[in-house]
Image (tube, rainbow, N blue to C red; front, top):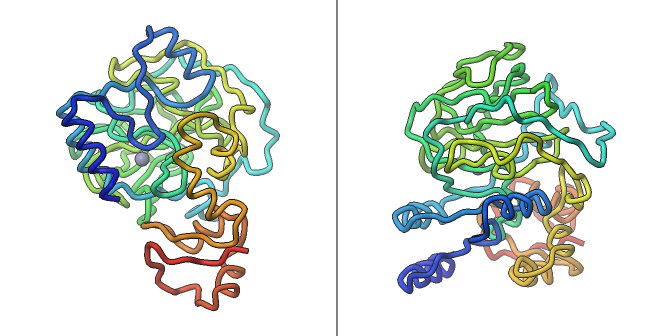
Length: 319
Ligand SMILES: [Zn+2]
């Protein structure tokens, strides 16, 4: 873990912009071209972090913990994933004209959407720097589907369903200001931001989902400029290799370029092979999911209890 920090620090000292993990790309191309690129790949926004913000990021990077997928984990019976069995269209045009920025100070992205090699999983939203108790606003007109608390991940969070078929998720809140079934307008205050759940400092974890598929919020919103990139977002299911709960390994194996080389080591140990090296923050459940197996199978295979404490570096048989 310290290696990443050392490399980044060295890169900074040499005056280079850096590319943390696989989650960020830096582009100097014009805005429209960058946007087309985003639409094509649903990857990351143009992200040119200022030097002062690098230090903030470096402080955060050692502490960022994986956030459980609330569409599959921590989901109570009242709020099962309504899209689980849904027939999701291959493409859809999503009208985002009636938007409001989820936080008015959201000019600093502290962690992008994308695959986090360190945790072997996707970050399905974007993290935006806020101050404690900053007001959080509904991104579009809609109706609150859920307000809940998830101590291991999102903390207090709110999910709103919108007529444009998106759902937005707001995490690590201090306090929700809305209740389920409440109708909201774009820009209505819905919460006070904070650092609840698995978080090391005040930030808003913000997701945009289409029928469960996590879209890169930065492909829709231009956070530094407090606007949107486009009036209509083109959803393309084929850009997701395994849809709503996809396995990062499969993304990796079908992704060209640097992302692949960064992940190749992990793939070698957990892809075709039979063992998995435990990383910080992983649980039997996350390892099972990642390797397409079950907690019961893992505990049996490794002769451990489901309550066993995992330590980073530990090798587990997965097949
Ligand atoms: Zn986040």
